[in-house]
Amino acid sequence: MNRVAFSSWNGKIVDNRKGGGAKAKEVKPLNLDGIAYRALMGWNGVILADPKADVPALAVAYLKEARKLSCGECAVCMIGIDRVLAILEGPEGGKITPADLDEIEAIAKNVALTAKCNFGRGAAMTPVADAVRHFRKEFLAAGKRAPAGGKTYGSAVTAPCMEACPAHLDVPGYIELIKNNRFRDSLDLIRRGCILPGVIGRACTHPCEAACVRNDIDAPVAIRLLKRAAADRDLAEGAGALPGPKEEKKERIAVIGAGPAGLSAAYNLRRLGYEVTVFEALPKAGGMAAVGIPDYRLPKDILNHEIDLIKRTGVNIKLNTPVDKLDWSAFAEAGFAAVFLAVGAHVGTKIGCKGEDVEDGGVVQGAEFLRHVNLGRKIEPKKKVVIIGGGNVALDCARSCLRLGFEEVEIVYRRSRAEMPGSREEIEEALHEGVKITYLAAPVGIVRKGGKVTAVECVKMKLGEPDESGRRRPIPIEGSEFTVKTDMVIAATGQKPDLSLLSGKDKGSVATPWGTIKADAVSCSTQVPRIFAGGDCVSGPATLIEALEMGNRAARSIDAYLRGTTFPKDLSFEGIDLKEQRDKGFVQKTPAQTPPMLPVADRLKDFAEVEGGFNADEAVKEAGRCLRCYRLMVWE
Image (cartoon, rainbow, N blue to C red; front, side):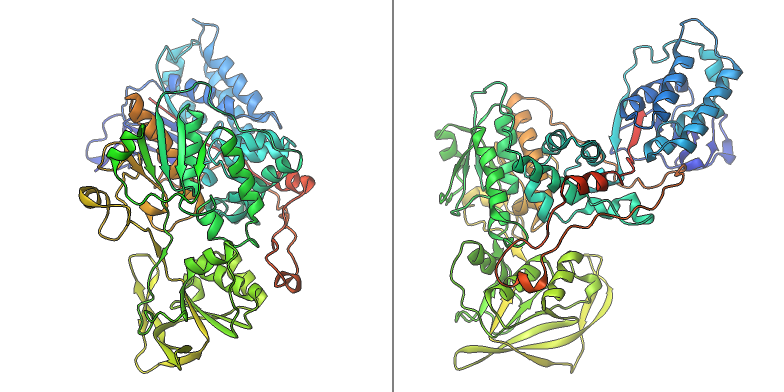
């Protein structure tokens, strides 16, 4: 049984301070990723592991951190926090009276009722009110003093959207700056964790929006488009330079791969003062952002602009320079102190059906097809093309084929639409543009006649129990075979890294059995000293923002390694319901701003960008919908 001395989390009171004996109630302490605490005060209550913990001191420490988050726009929680701190802190030697505690409870109640943002409605004062209500004797005995008494308290700030974001960007913070028409300041805040804001503002899968509290009210805040608005405004007004290093360090770092992970690591290492050289096999920098995402979703002038900003800080990017062999001794002889491996996952995986290995040009890998499109290589359109797969690569291939002049485009996917891994927006836009999607079907063979692909043999599927991915497993239906006529097949069923650069003893210690690179999930370090790895070559195909965050972490990890310090581990809130909050108050429904979309009739003429961005006024209005759902924790 997990027992704590006291808990008021989410309003459920469990009080074991007097021992409790057999009647002691079980309470699961919040899991703060291995951090042990005597007492914790968070947005939803108070938890005591040690009954002797100094709760008045904890309350003061919490209020001081809460004061930093109080924006002052409605002034309610700011005034309330200042008044409660005045009651608790001074003058030293004074007494706290029962009337003082009654006033604190009244202030907390009124702040929750009248504050305009979710931080004020709950997190700012709710746990302090709990503490005063259930620890009156301790507050009266503490007296008016500075209860913190030199103690060191841990603290952390997050939000549902921040925790959902792989880079843990301060989403409420940069949105609030846009709300106040401070676009440049917003962009500076975004770039602390996302060095490609114009790219991510267009091509991100935006898990932050799925976590937005407004989903339960009207519609999520358009977080991705607000990020784009900050980047686009900066570009339109004449882009400012990125911050460079404050001091130069003697070490040189090699980065292999100029995708989001490599670029992010390179810039962050350069800002720390290292000389950084990036080796890129392709003729363009950007990785999958450059050769895997079509221009109608991500215009390459946006990507190139953000890469140029990185280069101006002193990062040296060598294009058309593949690293054929990862030999640490060779890098050491060249003067490099560490290597970050970020080669991505550019090799398509096989469908697993008969006839796909015949090399006649009739079956093409999705990643290769998109690479040819983005590098401007000539593609002869066919009358009919079938794309196998249900992710964004399949959707990008399908929509690109329409723009290239293919007459009929059909996607064959083995599960239902509900299980499709492609983003909802991309599926809807593909359907609007005329892509046909056949669900619950899988290919079993490629049919050829006269040396050319003429059809795909398929079998109908039914969904069974969920597999390891959490989605229901597709099961072939016996006797349900059918044929889909086609002139070309694009296999978009997955991708893997090209690990041909690994050889000898390093390959066995760095490569995993499933064809990725073995690296620590937190520090990006491998079993080979001074070699680090991150991005899709470690995780397998993931999102741009996930790869970018691995680059952020790799830079911090390499710096810690070379400086001989401990790698700073971020606090994880995994398993804690960040949406759960007692005091929610009334939130008025507010329509979301919607971006302009290029008419379908005009899209298929070329690869012009389909989704427009917000203008300044629209961005400010949309930013005003943010509820500032900051979650604060303080512990000792």
